[in-house]
Amino acid sequence: MPIPRIPTRSELVDHLVKTRIAGQVATPRENNLSHYRQLANGVRNFWLGLELGDRWADEQDVLAVMAERVGVNDDPEYRYGQDTIDPELTVDALDRMAARLRKAADGHQRVLFATGHPGGLLDVHRTVAAALRTAGCDIVVIPDGLQTEEGYVMQFADVAVLEHGATLWHTHSGEPMRQILTALERTARDLPDLVVADHGWAGYAGQHGIDSLGYADCNDPALFLAESEGTVQVAVPLDDHVVSPRYYDPMVAYLLAEAGLR
Image (cartoon, rainbow, N blue to C red; front, side, top):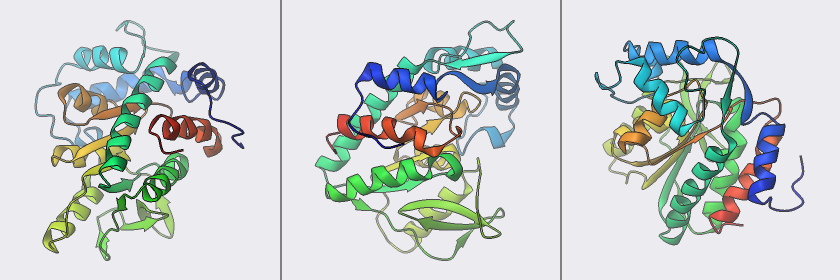
């Protein structure tokens, strides 16, 4: 999807709804509620690299945050059918992300990009990384030889990913980010000033005390809870795997323009 120009806010909102990045998204209500319940019950795969303790043991508290920050239906009795992401909240979060990216560019900071959802978001991260490099940022190169029980921690087009069986791997785990940060510390290399990621990559970085920006779907509540607590700086609500990765291009154009990077 070529981008002839940078969309206005209203044009971007319309595009997000049309492509189902936001609005009436594909993730069903029953899946959302199942994930909220499992997070509340302490299933760590849903904590996305964070340490939530017993602070979110009531799934109704989780739902309340998701209604406020994502725009899902706030009625606990609505249990089946379509659920939503408010596109206005998506753009609000992009604006907050843009402000932190602008700070990184102005300070020529060290930035690490990573994704647990390479099928949807790899090119989103790659494009932003390229813009920050052009602005003078140091895009962190991860150490070689890292692996987890799921696979190898690799880097493609400036974005850290998990590779398994010659395939880029979808993961919620924070372990790949832990491997990267531990290896940087072990080799006396500077940690990133900023991590731009999703899933457990963003969650673990924020838990480690690094400024962290992340994208998250309406069935991945942990990053929004972390944002509400200040552990993650920004969580952008969106469907993280729509029909075509090109659908995200206008969103990225808007983000870079707001950050002064385009």
